[in-house]
Picture 1 (cartoon, rainbow, N blue to C red):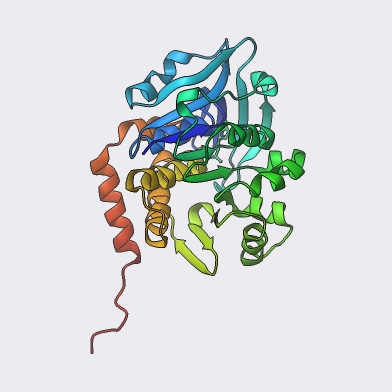
Picture 2 (tube, rainbow, N blue to C red; picture 1 turned 90 degrees about the horizontal axis):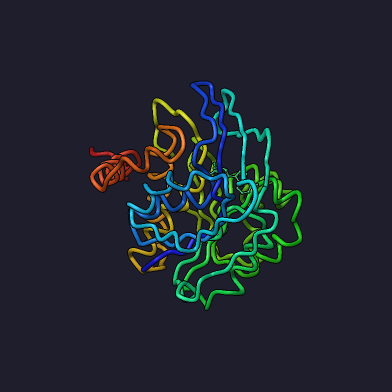
Length: 305
Ligand code: AMP
């Protein structure tokens, strides 16, 4: 089954303790599609300005991502400038230039309105709501957000929660949205407002999935060299949704495996700038890392006598 993603298509300028990248391909929809396309067909809806180096998206097309829903509008592309210091879990936004995003009205092409899996990538929650008005009862809707929108569009975001099945966000965002310092309480707050599952990501400390009365935890892969954390959240979402779309099953066991697929894809993207690493890897690399994940958490319940 295929996945429809709507989100930002950006030019990112990123500084980490290990180097700098200027105006590289980024954005929530790009990272998501680069990751999810390893598991399922992906259709991307978004907008770029007339200054966007669209040929740089050919690599996505080559991975089978359908870019028919990507509009090119008059004006500047969305740009994000961020910095990570030694705590690679915390991105510091230096500048957000919405450009063509400020006038963007997502139009879901008729052929994509029946998409069974929908991911609302990090964009204005009003646009995320507009997308949901255009699609026909998907099997699963997941969404992401960030501090920028929690601050500026809180009421819309709370309205959006009523219409999504899964919310993915990081621990800082969960605390900011719910005003609970405790993540269990924060998850409860979110689950009471619509989503059936909430995934709280904690960067190098793994991710929790809260669903009804159950909690699942997956560690992050212990990488020795993390180069640039940008896109880890969206790549996680891509692995998570891509796996569910491929399996077509939405029970607890598949959701748990989907979280591990999310952690796996997040662990690849941070090894290089932009989405480069996701374009290099193949199913063998993913399989190997999934096996390493299994070994990472396997233990004997009872010690042998
Ligand atoms: P993450 O997966 O959370 O690291 O997301 C990183 C991506 O989010 C970058 O490629 C940015 O272009 C994009 N981004 C940053 N700020 C925003 C925003 N306010 N709205 C939409 N996308 C954003």
